[in-house]
Structure formats: C-alpha cells, structure tokens
Image 1 (cartoon, one colour):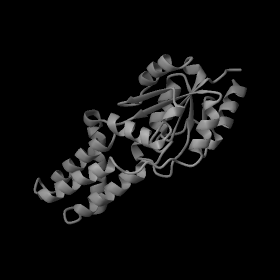
Image 2 (tube, helix red, strand yellow):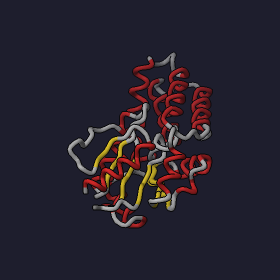
Image 3 (tube, rainbow, N blue to C red):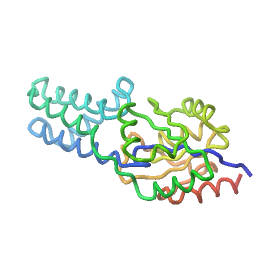
Image 4 (tube, one colour):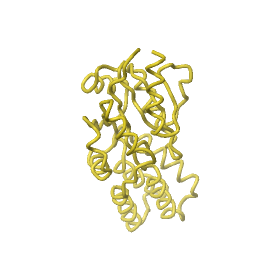
Length: 235
C-alpha cells in the first residue's frame, strides 16, 4: 500500500473565496463602460485581454486591473475619460483588500489532516496579495511550507514535490482548478483531488481524467481524508 505523506493544497477558491470578488469587480467595470460597449461584448474583450496578458502580468488582481485599463482604452478608441481610469484603478486596489472568507470544512479538515500528514500550500498569483490572504485567513500555521509560484506546470510541481515531500508518489495535490491543480500535478507523478467551486474562471476548466486511478473528485475538504484512504487502499 502506497502511503501518502504530504497533502499540497491550492489557496484561492479551495481554502478561501476569491473568484466572487473578481466577479464583483468585473460587474463594476461593465457599469463604468456601459456607454461604450454592451456587457456581453465587454466581458469577452476583458477575458481575452486577461488571457493574452497572463504571460506578461501573471495571475492575480494587479494583472486583472491592467487588463481592465487596456480593455477600456480599446473599446473607447483611447477616448476613455481619466475619471473612469481612476475608478478602474480604485476597483483594482479594492480587489486587493476584500476580506478573506474561508470555505466550509476548511479549518476542521486541516486540523484533522495535520495530525497525520505534512501540509504544504501551493498557490499562484501575486506574491504580496497571496501572503496577505494567507496571513488574514488564520491558516498559516497548518502549513510546513508555502510555495507562491507564477504558474502551475508539471515542471513546477516536480520541483516542489522534490523540495518538500517524500516524492510525487507519496503526495496528493488538492484544488478547485482542473487545469492548474489537478492535471499538471498528476502529470508530475502525484495524486490529484478536484474540489469544484461554484465560481471558476473558464480558463481553469478542463476535462476530468475519469479513467485515471490517481484522480478523485470530492464535494468539499471534509471528504478529503476518505479520498486519500481510497488512494492508499487501491495502490
């Protein structure tokens, strides 16, 4: 039987709410530009800007804010009023200061799993913002290591597993993003557990690896211990 000794967890929308605040900010952006573009078209152009800018700005609130400014310039043919740009920047700053709301079962699950496993946090995004949210969450003491990286790739996971675990074969990665948390971690040799969130950016969605024995889907973190036991029993 393979013993899983390390549990790596995603942060945003796995441990605490995140996407809902981006949706609030996006709605404010659409209201500001309502005289220049219809809401559906503006959504499409903003998401296109965010996606193409990922390689320049990375993930997180700051890149999202810059993409909002870029989109505002595009849809107004660079005629957007300075007051609107100021409002967009203010919305971006507010995005960096929303309260941290942990998701159901998180505190209880981490407290129980910490007794039997090494817990590490693996998240992507802006360093300052992720550190702020971790500190405000009250969860930092559960983790023996924290990795804040620019993107989640098989190579990045391989480095993290080598640095902080007994090896990928003894590690499970848990998160709400199929594209970032599950598939690349499995490709790096670990187990992957998908915890879907009601609000998940389309960029993070992908097909489930239903025939993969190192994959499981759970409804919430309260079911994680059982999923890990299932992996170990089947190995």
